[in-house]
Each structure stands twice: as structure tokens, then as C-alpha cells.
Image 1 (tube, helix red, strand yellow):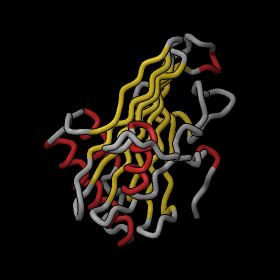
Image 2: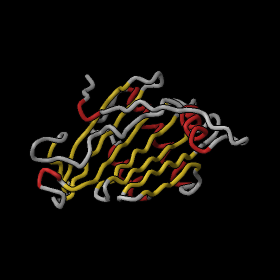
Image 3: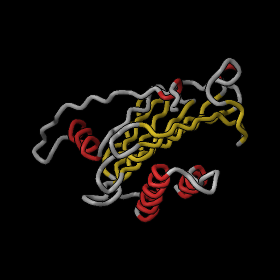
Image 4: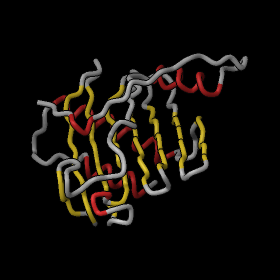
Length: 202
């Protein structure tokens, strides 16, 4: 957990002295989310489900409550060779501020036993939900080798697992749909995927 927080802090460090005010606001939100994770890394509601064939689905919601930041950490294991973790940060007003998405898998362009690659996506959201900035890259052994998957560098899956919850209330609705409410009633929740691999933000 500490390694993840340190890595994300570095990723959010501004590359120039003066960043746009909206981006600064997102960074401030992430700083608050990082403190929440660091203070109570095991204080979450959700599930960790493991399936046959090398698949798993983890959903860990760190609910800060009203007027406080919250964090959702989702992890998927795919074919026992790839792992994706999406960390979503929510502002005190409940709106989504930032998603850090990271997939690690072999470079399948060289076969299932190819060298490990990491694909990173950093998605900055305005309070009204629109995407402010999208940064993406692929690294090998810590060195950037591509902006996104290509013929030479390919991860085991695309970016379609990322399906943002726009608000904290959406996360809570998803929890009820899967786990049921206090009376055992389950709702219905459908997420829309955001295949950010092919997206660009002006």
C-alpha cells in the first residue's frame, strides 16, 4: 500500500511550476484521498472474490462519509497473467476527482511469456464529471517505451475494465446491488465502461 501511495504521489507531482487551477484542485483531492488510505488501509467495505482459471475481482470501498474524501480500489486478475488495479478518488462533495489505472502483464506481442509491461492511465475529472486530462504510458522495467499499446508493446487486455463510478452514491448503489441492503434487498447497477486507451483529451 505504501509503495502504491508513493508511486501515485510521484505521478501527480506537477511537471511545471504553475499548473491549471482545475488540475491543482484534483491533486489536492488526491492528497486527501492518499491520507485516508494511509490512515486506514484495511477499513473498507466490499468483496474479494477469486474464481477458477486465474481470475479474481476485488472491490474495496473506503467510505469517508459525508463531507469527507472517499476511495474505491478495484482489482482484477485475468488469466493468471495480468492484474489491473483502478484507484478512484472522490471529493468531499461525492464527485469523482481522479482515477489511477494500472495494468501489469507480459508483453503479449512477444508471447505469453514476454517481459512484463505496465500500462498507466491517469484520468483527471472536473466536479461536473467531464474529463479534464488523460495521461497514459507503457513502461518496461520502469522505463517508458510507448504512449499506448502498439504492434511492439501489447498488454494482455485493453482498457475496457475501467468503468468509473461518477459519484460516491454510485459506489454505494453498486455495493447494495452486489451485497444487499440491511434488509437483504438487492438493487440493480450497470456500469458503463470507459475504454480510455483510444481516447484523447484536448
